[in-house]
Length: 144
Picture 1 (cartoon, rainbow, N blue to C red):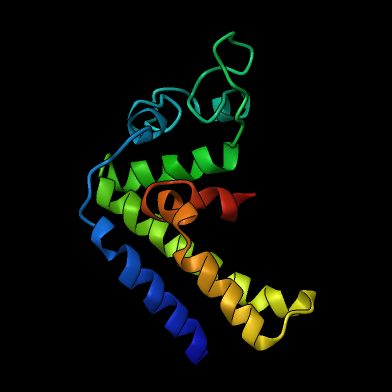
Picture 2 (picture 1 turned 30 degrees about the vertical axis):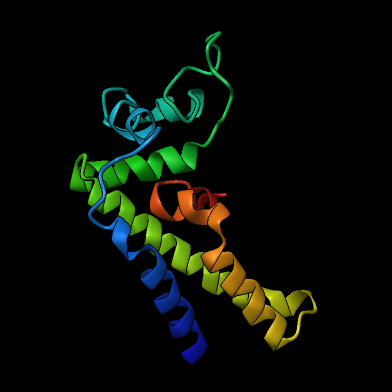
């Protein structure tokens, strides 16, 4: 339990500056400009549209179908509105949760406690996860 808290504190320390950041890059299209997220379409439409709100049968879709993630975005949007802080905070919470899950699953696949700790630390701090921890994608890890 103490190591869980340490992993969470490391995640928070690394990404804490994102709490007051605005939406960036494609967040505007995926969240604020997504008709499925902002509630401009019936909720059932998420089953027939891609991550960006484009119908799956449309020629411009790239078929990134993530209905659980879009549904989660919609719930967050309905509760907090287009508040980047809410999305960043919840993304960071999700990243912390998944980091702890990595730590607890690693021994189940045969890693020692030391290796599990290293794997979780690497997952927590690796730059490849910066976009997911700071923006919106960690919800994909939870909703898969």
